[in-house]
Amino acid sequence: MSELILHHYAGSPFSEKMRLIMGYKGLAWQSVSVPVMLPKPDVVALTGGYRRTPFLQIGADIYCDSALMCQVIEARHPAPTLYPAAAAGMAQLLAQWADSDLFWAAIPYTMQPAGAAAIFAGAPPEFLQAFAADRAAMTAGMKRPSARDAAAALQNYFGWLESLLLKDGRAFLLGAEPSVADFSVAQSVWYIRRAPPVDAILAPHMALADWFKRVAAFGHGQRHDLDSEAALSIAREAGRHEAVMVQPEQGFAAGAPVQVFATDYASDVVRGELVGLNHERITLRREDARAGLVHVHFPRIGYALRKDESKDENKPS
Image 1 (cartoon, helix red, strand yellow):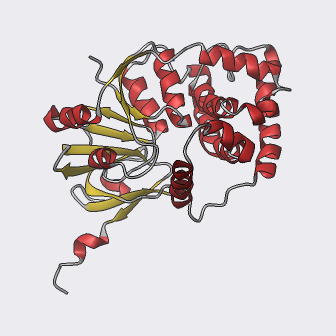
Image 2: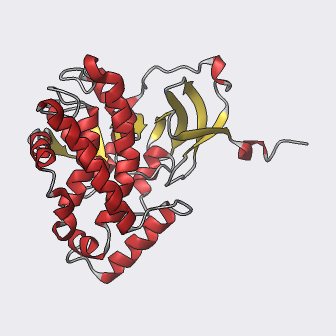
């Protein structure tokens, strides 16, 4: 059975990004379906409070954020690569833009009333109310564009992306080979396509439509369903973790009590003991009654690392 366990749900754009990457690499993977909204007790047992979807589990190592997940999968399964040598830096820059700016134009555009009605067709009113409250809490304080502003942005973005494809008739955004950028862009196109009442914004961009068909054709690899209790058991019984270390020049000491949180949205705090830190990644050690001793990994970009002041509350003054 594959060591890769993806915790995800069907309608999650970032989950679709990772599912397509599994397909591109021809991987077998284990699938744990997580709740669409809080409460998520089994998720929290593994992550310590990180609530975004998806996350990747390998034994007792928990990898948060799709950017880090891509790097972890690439390290274990390097062929075919997500980072072609001819465009590796550009691929990562374009992927970061797609995971942020493009994504946050696609979501409010798609979730205008007509699009939301298609996405949630048949859902009971109480679910819709709970979902809206959940997402409002996730994005509290975040400035999101109106549907009209998002549409204007998307019209520009899709034109830019199509110009890449039309430049020399390339098959993928950065050349003849796919890269991580293709999958990061594809998740937003996929989400808009799920809402036919609003997907006409894609219609003028035929080269982009053909590109999306090529990306979608990779499929999702070999998926094997796993329940969340089994995933918790795998973590609890793993008995080992990926080797990590704290680089002293990063300004934190190994073993320090720290907290990590996302800097844009869903900024739930995860607390633990710092066991890994460099300019690319943060790793916390934490223990849970159900998941056992786990290491939770975050990318350095997009996440804040702070001393956990709550650990000092009981110290004598």
